[in-house]
Length: 314
Image (tube, rainbow, N blue to C red):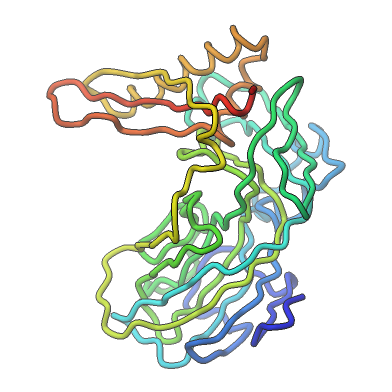
């Protein structure tokens, strides 16, 4: 519950996919503060007691529900919706999974795997992962977007010009996100909340965790944005930087091949140095390791680096 909010949208008011014809759950004025009760990306199918058997029967038709939409008075195509993330109410549990057919190395990790996380929602202290691993947490909303102009129902899985499943770790507290408006009223929806994620979300899942989100909504008239942009209110990796990084690289003429190779080498390193099963290292990389393009100008080869925070095993 948010006592200082103008509106609350309950988690029962969720939808799957994007559609300009979805009826609004709430109508508000610019300058309003909205409290979204969100579901996790499984739509509640994988709770704190989830097992590998629950993962095996996951209904993908219920995946990535978003709460909303919010109709913003005065919003018209060409404007930008200005959304400032104010607060998260974490649940204290989450999950990370290797889902067959999904993820950067789907061709190598063919069997399902699941890790259920428990964390303190009041302190947000680092969460345990196996013997000795502690992952720093940083809540954010993975899916946040507006209705597209094109008629019909559109999948929530791919990110879009109007936002959606962006999975940008830094859309966290203090960040202001600007989204291009394509339909009257904008129709903002939010979901897919995470307790932590590395840049790249390489196995396809982060620490997927049910949370409620409070945001402040405003409007920028005639902004003419082509794609989303955002502003952070300070440094974005302090939760990871304290002990430095282990870094592996991929080098070659194909950027995606280099991305995959940098990740594979980090998985090998973690497995060797910490006695981890490769699939566990893969999932850990997804929740706290960062992919970076280090160099893309010295033809014909590009350099991709994978940064793994040493603080996890400090």
